[in-house]
Each structure stands twice: as structure tokens, then as C-alpha cells.
Length: 491
Image (cartoon, rainbow, N blue to C red; front, side, top):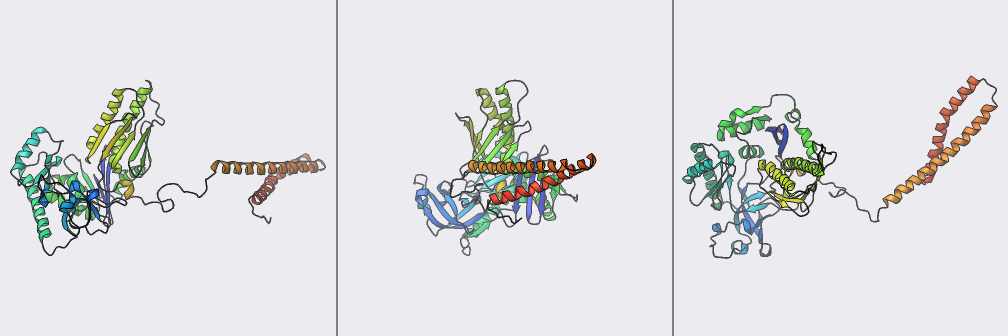
């Protein structure tokens, strides 16, 4: 893991086998709201949309859907109809947490089912959910369940993270106590009469601490940190929360940039491209639309080595599946994703490619779901979108075309006719210039025949004529071209 802090910008790159697979960036002026807990004020309730718009003090109203409402906290019985208009009214204060940052014209997404993430687990005060990471083995799952059974109150829930594997009971107990203290502090602020909505009750730490808390564990070889402020923050957090990882962090001491030294900038520049080249010669074309992300797989220069077309196509698709999984993580793409693999005849090959895609996505910590291959040979999948993607973080919309990539004219554009007209004009001008050059050459030949100088002198005169003639011809061509375009030449 590489951490680089320059002024108010912090960037984090995760490297696997000398290849960057994830990238995080944040500025102090553009902090994410995800995880923050607010005492919001309901502005409007739309029963037909089963949603409510809530003011959290960020200018644009956030949206709270009925599926994210904590019905138990509002005292709604199990038999009562769960209608959002029955529990929320305009002007009412409501405790909410941000689950998704604003994207484009869409406001932030909210939930009233609060969850507080820790180092080893996620504490759910309302008890709406409980679970354990699927990556943990069965014996470890049973051990952790037995430990946490006595630590978690009955009205609360917990989600055990992968980082809890092998964690001693004392560390788990300390993590639970810290999260319970955070929740008690939030409740105290929310119930305080001096707290008026909208107001922030709990703010998530900055990007560096969040990434280390959620990702950095014993699986990493080391962490290199560039920047004094980032180094101090990481040292303080690791020393307080995970002292066993202190030996894995190092401060970057070289005068060279840490990203340039590890070729991160080079890989980052390629991640902005629409086209991604595969090692064997194939390629991916990634396009974003309002509704979904579309990825097209092409063979390109990949022609295979022996075998038949089916074998060549399958090898290309397998390589593409691995790269697609990496690009989804690197570019942090979310929403609906449709992948157009090259058509394969055998059902076994289609299953092989789909299985390879699922296996490669196993390293992705972001929630995702892969559907079966459709009758048209398309693979449909979804990936949770939390924050802004890589492209959005490093780009602005074009002011000239508004992001469409094209310019619209009031009249149909006759591109073919325009090209033919230019070709005809150029051919006529060139022909006239050639005729003039031939006339000049014949005149020069007559003069030379009457010359009484020696053969050597005549040869020199011809060389001078050859050198001077193109200059004069060029001047004539320039004048004719100017007249043909409607510009009057004074030469």
C-alpha cells in the first residue's frame, strides 16, 4: 500500500504483483459524507415515490427511501402497514446516516439504520442486522460468534469483518466498547435540546484512516507513506487501534516521488483511457452511459497459437475477464455493468469465462453480483456505487459540448460533399500549376538553344532554372488558391 500526501490532497494506491488494483483520492475541500450521522430535518414526503427528502445541512436535500427506514425505532408494529408517510412528516427531525455521496444531479442517499464500523466489526445499535464475513473459515466463525455473544447487547447487532480472524478476545472487547461509546455519544447529542436539525452528530475520519481501518491488515507486506501529516495520522491510528501492524509501516525517505518511483502515475494515466489493451493483443472498450456501464471485448491483434477459432476466442475472453475485474476495482465503477464477451459456441467455454470472472471478483471488497450469460451472450452484473469513481475525481465536464463529445449543427453536415469539393479544388489548382510550369520550361528551352555559351555554362543555367522555377510556381499556386477561396490577392 502506497500513501502520498501533497498539500491538501491524499492519494492511496494498492499494489498487487507490481500492478495497481485500487486507487483512492480525496481533498480536504472535497470530503466524503459516507458514514456521517446527522440529525436531519424532513423537508418533504412523497408517498407515491415511497421516499422522503431530508435536509442534512449540505445545500442539496438527501433522499431517504422507505426500504432504509428503521421501523422499530419509530414504534411501528410488525402487523402495521409500513408506509413512509405514517412515520415521517414535514418538519420532523430524524436520525440518519449517509450511505452514498451525491453524484451528478442526484442527492446523497440516507438510511435510518445506523451502523458504526470498527477495526474488527461493525456495530449496529438498532439490531436490524447481524452477520459474519464469508471469507472466514467455519471454526473461526464459531469462535467469534461465541466471544461476541456475551459482548453485544440484545437490542444491538453486529457484523464481523474479515480482519477479526485470529483477533484475541481482549481486542474484540475493546473494539465493541469503543463503538458502544460512540453510539452513546450520538444518542446524547441527538436528545440534547440544544441540538437543532440539521446538524452533524458523528463524522467519519479522513480518507487515510478509513482505508487503513477497512483494508490494511496482515495480508499486506508493507505500507509506504509520503507526507508528514499523513505519517503522523497513520502512526497515531495504528499505535492506538492495531499496534501489531506498526512494523509494516515505513516512511518514504527518498527525494523522488513515491508514485513515480513505483510507476503509479503511469498506470493511473492509462486508467483514464477508454480503451484498455490486453497483454496478448486483445482490448477492452469501456463506455459510461446514464443507465449503465458497457464493456466490449475485442480480439484486436490476438490471433492465437494453433487450435481453432473457439479456442482462440475463449483464451481472449479469459484474459479479458481478469482485466475487467481489475478495471472495476481500479476505476471504482458502480451500478449496472454489461459485458459483451466475444461469442463462444460451447456452453462449457461460456461457463468457464463466467467462473473466471467471478473468481477474479472475489478480491473485490465492494458488494457485487454477477448474473448468468444472456441469450445474446452478454454478462450482466451490478457493483455497489458508494463514492465518485476515478474518472469523476480527475475530470470536469467539457464546456463546449456539455460532455457529449460531439457538436450539433442547425443544418445537416455534408461531410462527404465537403471532402469531394476540397479534393476537386486542389486537383484543379494543381493541374493549372503543372500547365504553367510546362509552359515556362518550354520557353526556357528556346532561350537555351540560342545561347552561345559552353555546355558547362548551359548546364549551370539549367540548374538555376530548376531551382528558381518551383518558387515562381508556388507563388502562382498560392495566388490562384487565394482567389478561389474568395480572397483578393494584391501580389
